[in-house]
Structure formats: C-alpha cells, structure tokens
Image 1 (tube, helix red, strand yellow):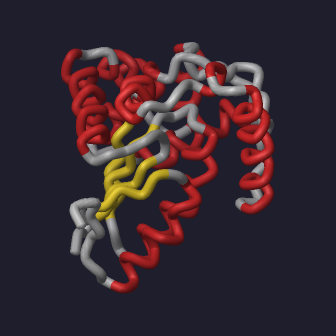
Image 2 (image 1 turned 60 degrees about the vertical axis):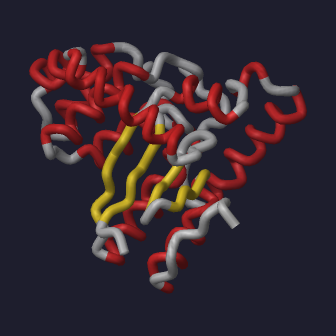
Image 3 (image 1 turned 45 degrees about the vertical axis):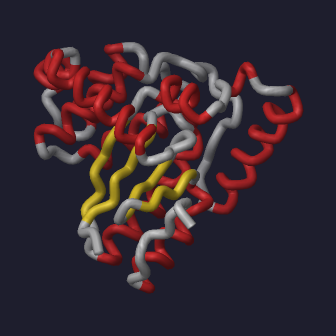
Length: 207
C-alpha cells in the first residue's frame, strides 16, 4: 500500500477547510505522509462538468450553505457560510502552499490558517498583505516565500497538480488520492480511513 495521501484542493474551498483536521488525523494515525497539491479549481470543474457556486441553480446554492453549517457543527468548527471575501482569487495563496510543499516546509498549518482566514476571520487571502501576515504567523519568511511563489517553477507545479487531479478523476475540492483511488469530498474521509485500515486494493471503474 501507499505511504502517502495526495491531497488535491484549493485553499478557499469550505469543504477542504472542514476536512483538513480529520484528514491530517487519519494520516498521522496510520503513519502516512500528506502531499499538499493545490490546483486550479476552475480547470478541474471544467473537466468534471461542475459549475462555480455562483453559477449553480438557486436550490443548489441554498443547499450548499446549509451543508456548510451542518458539517461545521459536525466538525466542531466556527464558520461563516457567507464570508465577506468569498469568492476571491485563490491562486496567490495556493501558490504559497505549493512553494512551501516544494521546499519541504510545513504546508499543513499554513493551509489551515488560510482556510480560517477566509471562513472565520473574513480576510481576503488574495491580498498579499494578508498572506504575508499569515506566513509570518506560521514561522515563514514572507518576503522570500511570496517572491518564490510567483516563480515559473511554482506556477508550473500548480499546473501539474491540476492535470494530475483531472487524470485521477477528481471532481472538485477536496480530493484525496490513495493508492490510485480518488475520494472526493471531506464526507468521504471515513471511506479513506476504512481503505487504509483494511489494506484493500484500490477500486476501479474498469469493472
């Protein structure tokens, strides 16, 4: 079985934020490494036939807000289902996470901090000043990291993550890929946990 979980997401996804802590707990409990792989959610949606929240039917928009509140209670997380700065451009923060992961730094705590900034603190994570503050709070050199995050190398990593996610049949964010099997949504973490515990082989659509 695999020693790692590939975690495909975008930092402003409410469900990625809500699934972050239980995902990390599962990985730690089973001794698995989490590979943080931020992607371009719009390209993933395009590939899966999904739509951005604002373009969905009103009934789906209403249900999504109810679902955010429902999962927040389940996960014991304070959360505003209609934050001031959502949607916002996720690319600057996603690229910072890519840079941290590439450097072998702790991408987990910063990813969590970005989600909290959006969904609890009403901060605009597309604002470089906000990102600099979050980086410094999590022990990173903001100036160096922000500069590196804009490099062609890091932009290429995010593009590669996006193509990998599409190839893995990720429908949206978050998506967890373990031993070649994709689990879409924080509500599928129990299935991921069960797969690791049982040691079963990956299921396939080729049946």
